[in-house]
Image (cartoon, rainbow over all chains, first blue to last red; front, side, top):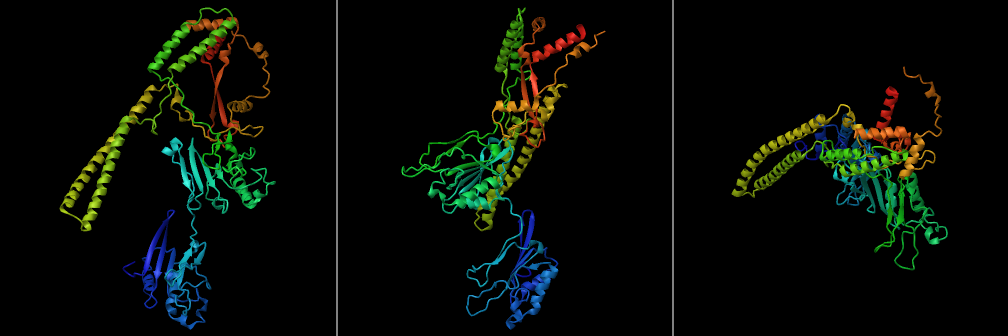
Length: 550
Length: 69
């Protein structure tokens, strides 16, 4: 608002798709230019959310001692005007309390302190907290600090983009908690469409910063699947000798807090509960061994195996190793492509195999033997001819080499144009700053011409890319349609194709309620569900009662 | 190929045997879509794929019984 008054600044802040306007004011105590500017520009101002600054005015609204102090009764008209403008015209309310702390504290000791700095806000944006900071620096004015009542963006949300390198290759994504505590790291691992979160902890044995950070950030943490680390705490849950050892009875409250946070808040269970293997083995022989490192997991993700390694290297802590109970991605099945060479070889081999079947059979054992041999030979033929399809890494199945070339050319043209633009801006800036030379000017002209040429190249590359994708799509779907058989409708129905199983998809035994991991147990659970316990007897008289054919 | 298979099938009928190889099946477990809890066995559909030679044998036998018996 420099045209009207230098002492008034309008600042817009974009937070979570919401624009908040802050009006920063310095009101001159003799001419009141800022106040007049606000009053004059009432119509041109946007909706104000926060008005804050040094108003240099006294009023009963923020200073109850005005009535008793004659020195504060100057400029009554201006202070009333300020209240009227803020409350009636802009609908704001004052945050400073009536008998709140003074905001102007003179550096000279003989002067009195006043409330001169005010904060006005919208009622719906009333601050969660408001305080007058003591740290004035070299000024007479104390800074005002307030907390906005707007939702914090969730900082610790594990997201791995689908189709990204991290997503496809199962790379771990590190989401640190450095703001709150360097000793806690949140790592997200994307396995088969499921994001597993690991919280890696080092809990300081004196200040317990990691424990406090976890307890404080309960709301902002995502669902944790594994919490593992060095907790430096003793508890009878993982160390049965705590009761007998006095040295382990310290920090009982902290270890109870750890158990409460992990079990009750995050619903985790301790893995090294039963084994009670010591995980901290001092390199000094006179020290005792402790269980300081522990692993907490979701009950559904209880490890298949857990072990404390002996190989400590140079540390006192033994590494913990556990096996996740998640299904591996199903490998694509080997198939024989229709009309392929392998298909022709397989058909010939099968023809030869069937023609070599015996011409007569002596008894039923001979029949059984022949069929068993036939099955073995057929499996051998299938194994020798079938190939595992090599799936394209591109998301679209119709994508081909031509699309790759066109896309690469388009990306190259874009990068070249960007480089040229950046170079031109640099040269123009240097020219404007007076560092130019005749060579510089010539280069600017050359780059401008090149920029126009790259625009043409970009247009051509874009068109080529579109055409390549259209051709690839047409080729792919025409091929599909020509090969499609009217009776094999399932070839084009998406829900019948192989689906990736989720990593946490474990069956639960309906009698015991426990999750099953082994294939034999899974088969047993399915058989129990789908096979009737007492099948109804078959009534064979039905056959006798059937009417004979005419 | 067909002649040798028919010999094999007639041998099965004459010997009165349904070979064990015909009864072996491969079961595929398909998850049903939009189920609330995939840890329950009933959230899956089992499809048993039988031996093709066995299915052909059963079809031939049914045909024989229906029209030629």
